[in-house]
Image (cartoon, rainbow, N blue to C red; front, side, top):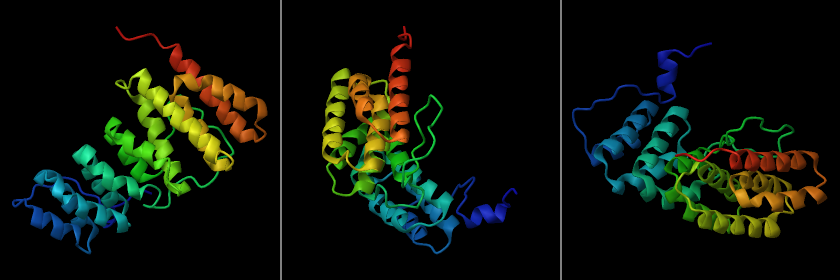
Length: 241
């Protein structure tokens, strides 16, 4: 059943918004409102003000936000500020919402696109793109697996679709992923996540082929096979002229 306008607004959905007065002070006040659509207005006004000094208020609001559309507005504001948002957003990986993948799926993603990032912060950092990669790679050294899982999803997505990353950068990233695999790959979900991320790294093919020889978990084997196929598929794409 389609949601009514009121139901959407109760979840923070905001359509056209053209405030007469725009200021940092008003944006912060709106972000602190008990009404979800008002908080959405605060997030949007922060983009209008266009002052990175509002980012701590955005992060604070996002960290406790429960309403879907307000979360989306807050995340769009993080994307708007780009690289300035990254140091504040990365610590929230795996901590906002409950939509993250907790185990290995019993089916393989069968599209040729990169799989959807379920974590809203991973999606946000993916939209910020290449400027987020250094902080995401640093997150691979975290002791919190939940943060590493989501960092891997964001890394995989960014590298998969990037048109500006050099082969040298991809080789550096691959080394970091293999190092993580050797350190944490004993844990099944981590193992699966890394293997999925490796589909974005062309030179990972031989590493994946060697993994296949000794892997016992059926669903991880299927993911290895898919990553190899993705690498082969991308390598056959004609170069743009």
